Image (tube, rainbow, N blue to C red; front, side):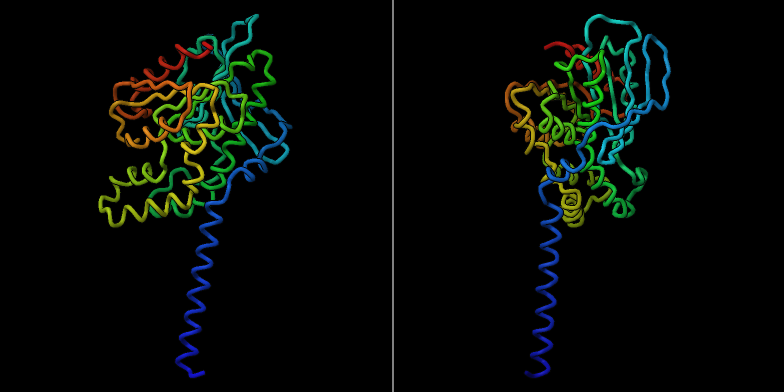
Length: 310
């Protein structure tokens, strides 16, 4: 074989190997997440109360849970101090990535309900920006796969609480938490009602929309959004692919009329995929943020007026 032909076949072989490697990586990134969820799901083995404070008729405790797979979850539990002879509804919140268990403080008056909010099991840097986010991808993926089992672990803990009514354990995914709450509710039938506040489906659309301010040029933004969606296994975590499994338990979606972060098509995709019984509530205003207390209060009022009702 001539030297030129040998070089050609060598380059072709390298190209084929590269294509095969890329294909294998894509398949790995898009693998079925349920076996990984199952591997993180285990029996509750340890409960540690890290702190507890009282005020305004409530007790708020910070608790760390550990299961036999090594999964560790930190949560805040806020409950009325007054004793009761009737079991209380439990309301578990998956909020924004940065707020975490601090979401429990949004419900200053739990109105007789036991409220819990969890920290995401994320061991990376929440403050990373720009290209630095790429270095956080492994930690982000670990957190994505650990969060639905973390919800199951918290439900195990709440189920043991003598004050909790196991027939009224409700779950809310707010904004960033919407996909994880949907997956957790789909997998765990102990969730008696699913709430989605300012959330949507179609992860690529959400990522692409979120990049528009920082990457205005579509020639760069579109492939970047596609890569980001792939790296976080977006197609596998898309809540519209899970939400039908929540039925016949009810789903309530609370949407903002001027939401600048969640595209209308993403909201519609999730609503269309949900099965009856379902309810959609529109709240005037933009997306929920900590700097918009009036929006947060409108959501709290809408939810707490219904929590506990069957």
